[in-house]
Length: 137
Image 1 (cartoon, rainbow, N blue to C red):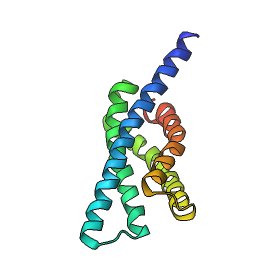
Image 2 (cartoon, rainbow, N blue to C red):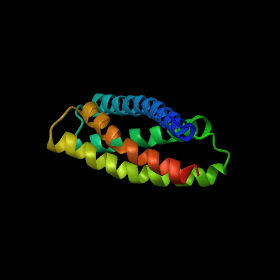
Image 3 (cartoon, helix red, strand yellow):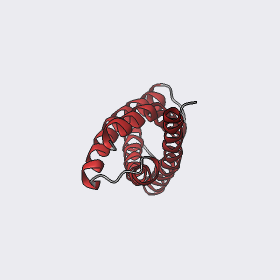
């Protein structure tokens, strides 16, 4: 294996590990939000599940930005510019994530956490390429 390929492979593995940590953050925020909402309101309508999914995704974005900036891409660029780019990629990812979540949960009737996990896996390649080729370049 050539050195550039192994460097890119290591970078993708790091990105995936950060994504795994972000997934844990995402699912924890989602579960906590839904548990609190359900405890207060007595039920969690589908629209609240969509809101909780978006909130969980957003919290995970901040977590992932800092981990990817310092560990995956070891970037030294201007933080505000990189975060703006990363957030833009993540907003596009959020759109894809929300669409996938709605299809898995609303159309297929899968469990809320499984729906979110599958949506995250679908968005992963898009986020990696956007981060590598634009946000941290």
